[in-house]
Image (cartoon, rainbow, N blue to C red):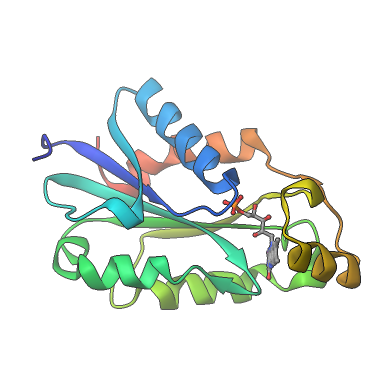
Length: 170
Ligand SMILES: Cc1cc2nc3c(=O)[nH]c(=O)nc-3n(C[C@H](O)[C@H](O)[C@H](O)COP(=O)(O)O)c2cc1C
């Protein structure tokens, strides 16, 4: 059972960078007086009682994580009844070589179908060789992709501050 009035921030994350973004968005909303639950979407069995839902996923090989459409399928009715916003995380915003942000946002919208998000965005993430498997390191090296932590916390917090009005929860 959840208390009414809470905002759910449901993320999926392989290496923690999307989780940290979700938690930062949660803190920013709490600082604005909102009640927030931040949780891995794999463990969420119901969105009942939440006034709005924010969904976050990293992008791997140009794809939003399958956990997102799975979550939407499990919670279809609940998600269709509340405002939903979503964010993708990846290196495309700082490295066009890996693909276009617009393409990712299209895939994010498709992963949410039939839910129509009130807002979607893509944040720059973190790509570190030390956190990669041999396969990932090989791909990254072959593609000559720039590594580093590209998360811009000011951009992330600014998006979070806009959320209550975008979601229509006051
Ligand atoms: C094997 C691999 C493939 C990736 N593919 C993409 C991609 O296609 N587009 C993109 O923007 N970022 C891509 N990234 C970057 C990740 O999205 C980025 O590292 C993100 O912050 C990871 O999130 P996480 O820490 O929550 O797992 C890739 C990273 C790895 C390791």
